[in-house]
Length: 89
Image (cartoon, rainbow, N blue to C red; front, side, top):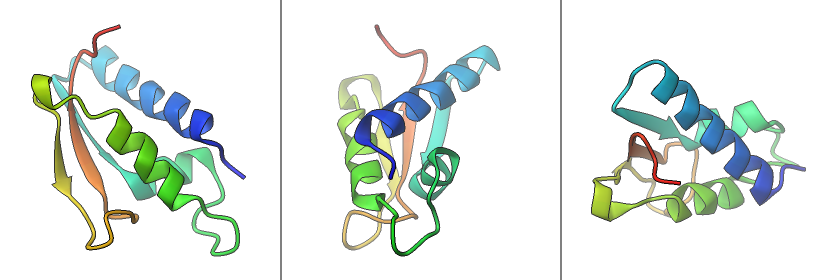
């Protein structure tokens, strides 16, 4: 089962890929992130709430990060967040 640390590591990997591609922002979708880490969609083992919590914890509103799409529950595959790049260490 994916852990918060695995989601965090993949989130940072996705941001780094965007930075290397010369992007100034990256839009990350919870469903995509969860698929990259694994066990999604698998209704018995998915960890979407953990995935969404990790994504939301990485938001830095002072640099312009913002939620683009959020399901009514606040946690779901459609959650999409725009992160401004590059990230501060």
